Image (tube, rainbow, N blue to C red; front, side, top):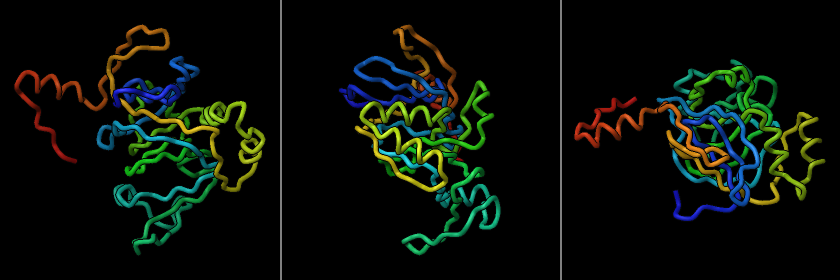
Length: 219
């Protein structure tokens, strides 16, 4: 975390499975999220967002395509050749698209972003460390409308969601997104809350403090 944080920001504390919208130090809202699984964890970082895509295509990272055995012709996936000459698979917009209706563009080199999902039943689970690393946001259309705010183009958002064409919309301001990992944190009232340790980071730290660092097997 930087020494000083922005006045307005999005805050994703992985163990809480929540995304908070904070403005001038006050929490405006919160959204349930699904975070990376233990073997594909959501990284800790700061990544700004200034736009989002309605009806996005999913260009599947090669690592995910290989691990999941994705092939063109299955699940609506089609082959696409990248600029470097390699071939990957892409899932066009539609009801089967894994990104759902909205994807927030984030500026980072790890292909991490906020997005919708077509598998919404997973939000009903108590423990939601399930993704390949990106963060899926419940009611992400409401988040988009909230961040567009009074000065945003609400009509453009409504029109984009009503159609099936891909559209990129820009937010009135850029929002830094803080991805953090705290098993003890404060809630919107300032009271301390404790959470589980889905990546077992605390276990590793406690073992190291005891002089017995764990041997973590590589995946």
